Image 1: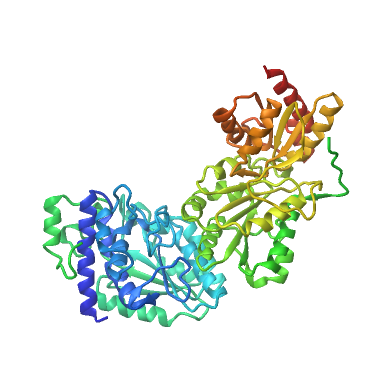
Image 2: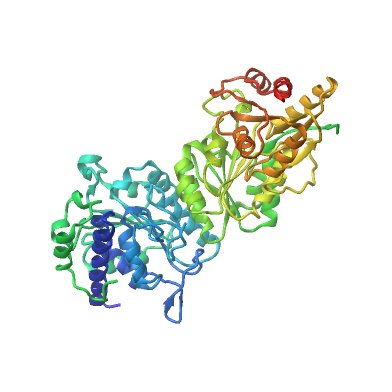
Length: 285
Length: 318
């Protein structure tokens, strides 16, 4: 897909995100907006997905296709929107986000059998381990699919992340590309003030990972280029870590660059102001 | 009363290792994981024949649970192994989210459960694991009673689609069940029929219960002994059928009295038929260092304590 088309999808996804969070007056718009380019580029351009007559098909095992895991499950709005827009389930279902009897739970889960989700996430620090297991299963099955996993930068404070970070190079899991959303923010404030992660790139390199950076994580061309580069480094005995520099709340001016919109929903006026900045390209749900 | 004899003593963890050896040969989807305790879990025969299906995780239990959950995506059947303390309490949230809530086909296989690992002491003697695991929706909880039953259970859980917690131990104890038994998850095993009291036991306590039954018989008391190897789902029908006959119950487990088999049985009785119940279990305390026999005696878990509990239960019958 051309960059321009991907950007149009991203604009619609951002509208979905703010509308979903507004609709239930809860959820996490900041990190969702910041990771929009990544998820759109993955699902609409980069990932090999199972399709039948041009339509995506979901099965839990995901054999012979690429898999994506969201470890920082609180940015579920962006994932739900991208999955729906990609055709995994009806976009009308986005209106049920976080409401009673919905398959779109506050944090992603397999429990309600939502197509596209393969593991529950929300309690942080577990997704990299799960992705490593799925990547290992692919190797055992002689399956050439790639496993992608996204984590938050605040999430790097969880100890389990570093257990997984040690495991991956030791077992040469080189069919996996991990991302850290480096937006520099977490609930209680800037990450450097809450708990300074220091140089994550140097840490992962010291653990034996191949580390690359995407400096402009909200520039679609830069993201697709970075994904292409990451893929080119697979298969050489080392897992790949992509440091994705994003702006929290990107695309909605009053939400940008602040931890204050980590987990706050816009009111009616704020929603109108946000939507005025985002073109409706694919039709609102 | 049926007499149980034995010709050898073995540890239940070796039954697990033997079961894994069989699974390695029978089921190509079975993958073993371990957190730096291969020798303790008796995994060497499996690893020797299937090195590509063994994943050493190092001392990183949280990651091991996550990797196991991921392996199921792609059709593998992971057996995640370590000591019971590190397989449950240490990684409860990982099991809760990535395994139970996600309904992943992970087998959590835990050795050194309860007091009888002995000299290592309370840091390693988990007495809360059955409670933690049985509270998770969808989790099957199994605590077999000897080497043969543990081997059979290990083989059986590979065919069960869903998360399982399999608990076994370190001490050598009599091997008294059949070598070629068929293990049915959720189905109680009638060890000995009787009329005066139902002794419902799990794990290492089944042999203690058998010995208690012999002591009681010598005193003219006819005890029914039931082996509940599957604590969840519980064979409620077998329990109710037994108490209809005997009118009182003793539960015996190597676990805290809070949250274990005893409480599961009590719940069945409260809902269906109120009869006196006595607990043989650790009385809400931690363990300590000692030999297995010393610990069973000090913490009130040996045959003598089961006999006393049976007499109390019978005395409370109206």
